[in-house]
Image (cartoon, rainbow, N blue to C red; front, side, top):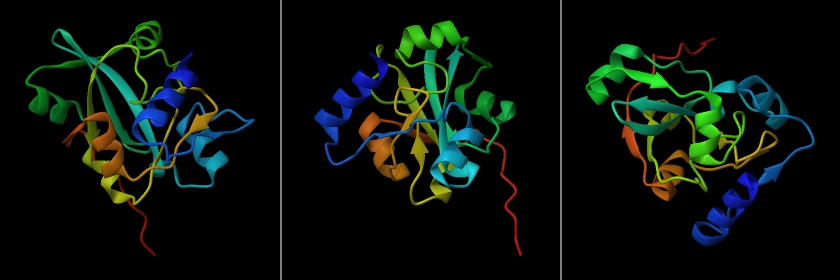
Length: 159
């Protein structure tokens, strides 16, 4: 059902985007980066939080960590990650395939500015073996996301 809802989302809103389905699992950032031949940061991970009385999704670069201080500053209160069962109920997507597309429940979606380091990112597409390639601004536009800054700075290697 989850992959089907993502297919329906793209058929309606962005038919030019192709869902990539692999035979191997891409359920973690490391597995996804290896399977797609990209750096871990280029994987766009979708995290689910309860903030006060509302549930939200935050999409961030794969190698970034949430900064609790920035989260509290941004939302005015402490955030709590949702458990796997609640995530599936809200999104219809299994953990490892969670994405901001084709959601079972309308949720506020936020994109962390860390994604803007890349011209193209790979968020999951509703299953633990699927993804799409998409420019971060287009992803945010398609899902009506607001841009925020809630991740710790990522150290980049220099030569």
